[in-house]
Length: 595
Image (cartoon, rainbow, N blue to C red; front, side, top):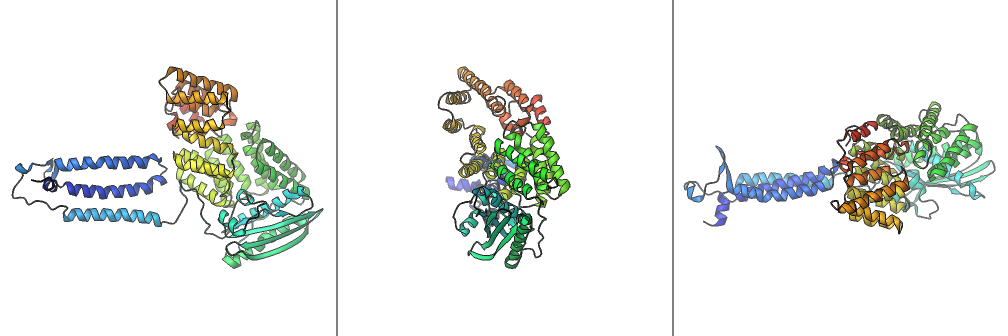
């Protein structure tokens, strides 16, 4: 008897065909579902390996066993088999039908996946072209005699942007991305392509004493057509009325050309009757966007002065609330004062104007970063986005919140919204990368951090996060290469090399002692600022007692609260994860069970 005949008799060929068809369907389904479930990148490789290893096992079992009406039994040798039993066909009709059904199912899954409407997923941070009528407000040119009036022309642009952002059915590119084109002489169609919008609003502002002249024009980006243009000569006291007129004219033009929700209502502008208060508010906005401890303190002072001149100027109170919500992250401003004053400013703003999204977002940021009140933060962001669906910052902060809570798919959707509205914002790409990092999707996270650094090479948070992906992947050689590029050439590099030696030679007592000494030196140099990375380094050395001591210290430092939820990266604190002190740290952050 030939081997081929024996393989046919034992139905090995049939098992091989059905196994292959089933594996095809399983791999297609896994390729589609795993990314949506936030499963780590290596899971797909593991499934492929298991399927491959299972194939020879299935063939061996098919050779040795057969399924009979009496159950599974050993396949008899040819000498012991019934000679009257006809030899089975190579595949058999039933095998062909089953394999065909499975193949069609696999092909259908794959075809449906490739033909699906494109949406942004965890691994796809590229924003898509808006399906809604969309517009970007470019910074208006300062045509005044004094260059110092540039803050005024920028402020007019931003206030117009904010008015349009709250028009139902209109998608508006966020400030960071729109203002990236300031001073750049680029074609409107190219700007629109990069911002993923269909229309551009541009213009100029000339201020002379108490008089202001504003020109504005609306451009259809694809063909470069001017849909509308107008010039306004007004006194400064009428500035809000001019902004309202421009915004209404744009909405009317978009209604005519695109059918934008006929009769779409504009939100009421947040006004003041005091031109000096308005000036201070615009200066505060300028400093707010610059970030940094000094700029934020300057913004706080400008907003406070504006609110003092006009106590009913709701936008100035909301500006103070926003500054307080982030100020302790940039310096040594007391957290307790920031929380108390920030909440008071936000509530004052909402007493005056309950529909101010910035005030709601500030309350959300305070609840998230400093109080660990996750439910209050989520409610505040939801309200801010209900009032202004184009509020990219609120989408970004919500993305970070949901990632901390382990709701990865929702987090990715929020990041997608932020990136669609603000595709050139480094902070949005950094937030998306952080969410991907929490979901253990390190390759995709690195791509997001890389994009953030392309947009802002000096973005320290993104650089630190990019480096951390290698550490969390336990790619210590990759981590070493990156950190050496940024470290001081002498003592800093020696500390890094000792750390690397401790991780890569864990059984070498001398390497381990050197790593611990390097960590202690870093601790002395940085104080409490680096307690979270130090805890992670110690955990990776297996120094569980030291890890827990550092974590207990970190939980007690108020200004570290925004970074403490990194403790929920439980895989990286596996050695202490079940210790009562680690669990107590999670309870303190209202994250019990989030590991």
